[in-house]
Amino acid sequence: MTSSRTSFALAGLLCLLMTVLAPAPSWAYADPAGVLVAQADTARERPGTLPAPQAVDPDAVRAEAADVAEPAVQTPLSQAEIKRRNSLAMFENVFYVFSMLLLVGGALGVTLLQSGLSRPVNAASQAINLAGLGAFASLAFLLAGYPLMVPGGAGGLAGFLPSTAQGDLAGILASPDWVSLNAARNMLSTQVVIAVLATLLVAGAVAERVRFWPLVLFGAVFAGVIYPLQAGWLLKEGWLGEAGASLAAGGPLSVHAAAGFAGLAGLLIAGARRGRFHPDGTATYLPRSSVPLSLAGASLLALGLPVLNDIAAGFFADPEYMPRAYLLLQNLSFQAIGLAAATAVVAAAVVSQIIYRRINGVALVLAGLGGVVSVNLVEIPFYSVSGITVTTVAGALVVLTVALMDLLRLDDPVGVIPVHLVCGIWGTLAAGVVSGQFGGQLLAVAAVGGFVFLSSALVWLVLKFTVGLRGSEAEELLGFDQPAPPAR
Image 1 (cartoon, rainbow, N blue to C red):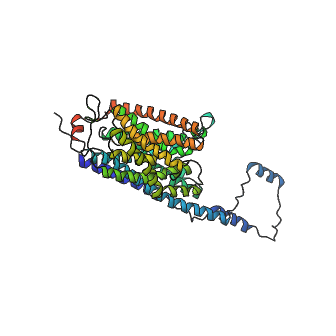
Image 2: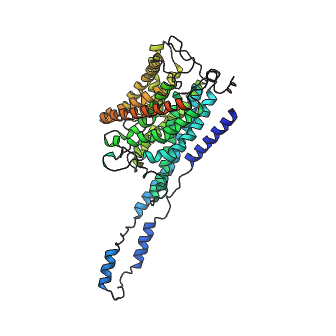
Image 3: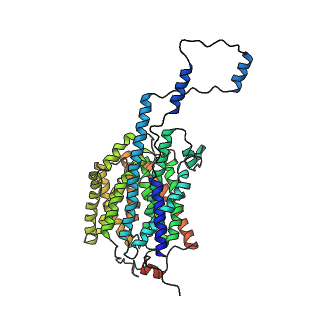
């Protein structure tokens, strides 16, 4: 049983990697057909000569002009425009390959983080669950989610209800513009990885409890319907984008906070792990599989998060994103990411010493990641004074949220709620203060949070009363890495 699940998960992971890493076709050096057509038309006109006189019937000419529309004359592209488009397409290909490598590394980081923070008897099964979840989520988003994510329509519902006429695969592949085709294919591939990354984050909140099949079924619904709908609202044409929400909210809100809301609904419905809390309500310590492994995973994830920043700023705002690339390169520097994580870790260490009278190592790992999440915005660069302030507050919020969840008997093994939900909301609202769009950001948080939480809770409840969510008591106590005991 374990070997078959492992083979299935590895095959799914291989399919996912082949899907997202397939290189987009490079059309940078394709010959622009419009130029050749215009040159051919020009060559037919011989300067200095007059056409031979022909007998023309005026009535026939009028009838033909009335029935047949005169085709528009295509203006040939200048050499400067051709060179600019070639440069843009070349930059696009290089940037997208670089971005997808970082995003796939971030997905690997999520796996290492969650496996390292799980109990030793569940570390392997958690990694297998994430591999299968990624395969289901990628197919769901590719076939259904991406068309829903692109808003359209007309009238008062434009940007609110999805339009399947835009964003479909047939429309992308039928694009007559080689530059648009290249950009569309690259954007599609990158958005698949982002949707998978958001879905993987949800699994951490219900780790060591929910079985494989209910988890992947929820992941398919989340990646295929819930995530793309709320992400489409934050697009430039979406109703939240038109209502004043910052386009940079596409990173911390539509990915991190949305995953946090879905995870919160799941852990409330699934309940805590067996043995996590004493009968009197006090929390008990459950051993971690490998804190160093979780630290390595958090580092990989932190390196991939700035890509969300640039994608939210560039593709959600303006296809001519090349001038924004410098911001990504600055945010990707070890100095910038290290500064964001360092300030959050220092703040978390101080708060942890005050609350627990000791240093909580896991809280420091989560705080560093939460600092990067909170400043994953365009309005708040990592290296700015406002960025340092935001990350410092984020580090303190992570420790305070962990303590509050223990009091409320909420079991989140890998810190999805304090890191992604709380820090994602905090960063989104802080960006509104910096950019002067606080009202729009607050509306976006309320709309996305309400929709994702309620819809996710509905899906979790349906799964609970149909296929069931949790394993047996023996499975949870012995760990999902062990074969299930035979039923008596």
